[in-house]
Image 1 (cartoon, rainbow, N blue to C red):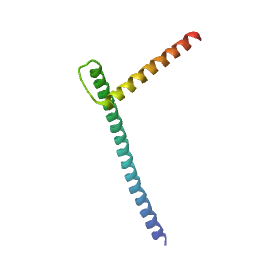
Image 2 (image 1 turned 180 degrees about the horizontal axis):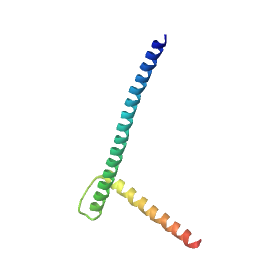
Image 3 (image 1 turned 135 degrees about the vertical axis):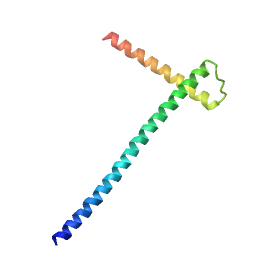
Image 4 (image 1 turned 90 degrees about the horizontal axis):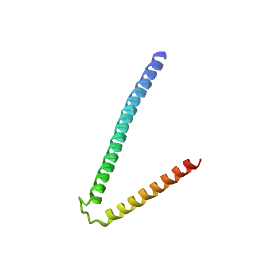
Length: 95
């Protein structure tokens, strides 16, 4: 009776170890995928900045309405941020 119990416990421990190994491996893959995704996002962002700079400097001519719309949004958001930063500086000066 006791050997059956020991065997069953060994089976359960073995199963838990296997599941833990799988879970650990999946976790490692997910961490690597997240890192790669972040690096990809950063690279796209860098490329976007370079392209926008070249478009503004007339090194690239890109007649794409969607790109023009995005550039307009970027310029508006940059202006809004500059305004907010100025407001924050004014608040700091007045305190």
